[in-house]
Length: 162
Image (cartoon, rainbow, N blue to C red):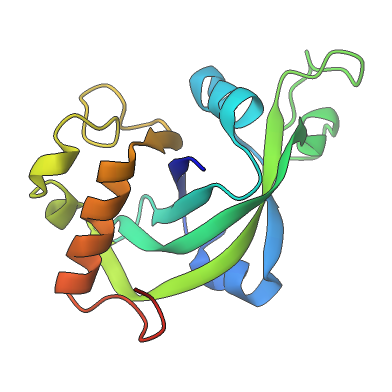
């Protein structure tokens, strides 16, 4: 099992939306490095932090699980869709998505300012300069544990999460 952090602007799709739907596709990723992580490395059962980006505050809002491995992102083919890519074809897709399933919503967002205080995250792509716009980020097991520990210290975990 691998660990990830995936970012979404909650004005478009947030943890509450995923909780309501239970499971959904993670479409619209338009960064090649993030696409490659999803396409080449994500597997069913991988654990993912749902991160609210461009929010006040930005930070980890909950946990989800990869429930379907990568497949072509359907939004790239439709001119009316905001994620349309005129170069992509069904024979040669450029963009991929995975399906994710809701696991847990934190009682409040674990803000980026708190994440920056966790020594174990100093070497993570989440805090690395130049990676701020990366929407899919691999985490090492120690990164996952450090974020979970901080969430526990701040009483952000629902009672049924350990």
